[in-house]
Amino acid sequence: MEATPRSPPALMEELVEEILLRFPPHEPARLIHAALVCKRWARLISGPSFRRRFRELHRAPPMLGLLCNGISDPDGGADSCSFVPMAAFRPPPQAEHSSWRAVDSRHGRVLLRHREVFKDGGLVVWDPITDEKRKLPILPRHTSTWNAAVLCSPGAGACDHLDCHRGPFLVILVSNHTEETSIYTYSSSADMWSGPISTPHPDPDGGCIHPLMPNALVGNALYFGFLTKTRALKYELDLQEISFIRLPPKYSGWRRAVLTATEGGGLGFVTVHESKLCVWSRKAGLEVDDGWIRNRAIDLEMLLSDDAILTSASVVGSVDGVGIIFLRSNGVIYTVDLKTNKLKKVYEGRAIITVVPYMSFYTPELGAVCTGHGPSA
View 1 (tube, rainbow, N blue to C red):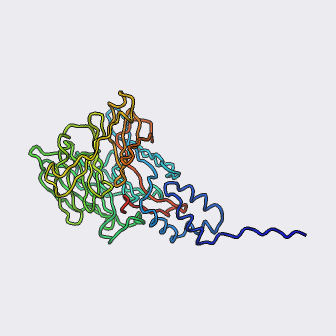
View 2 (view 1 turned 30 degrees about the vertical axis):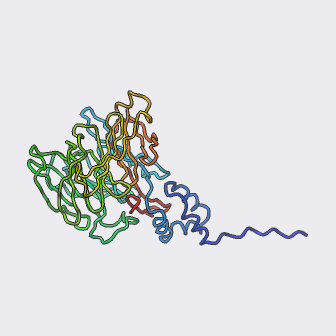
């Protein structure tokens, strides 16, 4: 009589965990499928210890989706924001925000503004995974041009940005008035606005903050661009001080541009000029051109063969610290990888004016999410 064949030995839990930890974070569906194999694996994956180790191992969160701000009225107002998935993650069905625009996203939070932003609830901080929303108090002062950033509160102590989406946060709003530029700060801990911190405009004719140019967080400083594209505002979070820097020369009047954090942790500036994607970085201590160096000029004719499409190309967003730029051309959104010069089509639809990337880790348990910002987070 033949012996009954033995069942294969179960993998040791430690070995299973080491394997699961190495699943690519930009494919959260793999962890979901693994959690469905058995209850033991489900408990392992949904446990806080696994989630923490997963975040620490991979460090840089994946891009789960894009928040695309579109134009849908005759006056050109941006009044609709759509979440375009870049991974298996899908936000709740109501994530199509009519009459809203995504202003900024960082550390797992998204800052949304309503078209009637100066009314109660006109600014909201949203967690796309838990669908939690926090309405901010009415803005302290009406202003025609402004921009804002959302980020973790430095007052919470040292934060590695790996699991801070439920922690305290700040919203930094920069606005223009008749002869000055002002900073207002919202603290989630106090649930109120403070400020303003004001300074005269850097140019004799004044200047307007660019409402569509993405801000950049570099170290402990936020950078915001002006419509003239000749200067940027620098706000040091710890010192609460405002200063101004010049942007690369000859950029006044050029096409859309973005400020971004470079992979090396510095400030970058990217725009399209004469069929080329021009990439600049700022080096502290250099006197020439206020420290700006043009690192490269990517020939878009090699990437976009249609001349008619090429003439409409403009920069509409970026991923800080990763070297990814969003390029819009005739209703199509592309990513350009600055490391490889590769172009990839990611979205096509109605007119898009800006793209805000949503970066976050995601594990099967609802709310089991962690976030970071850039590879050094």
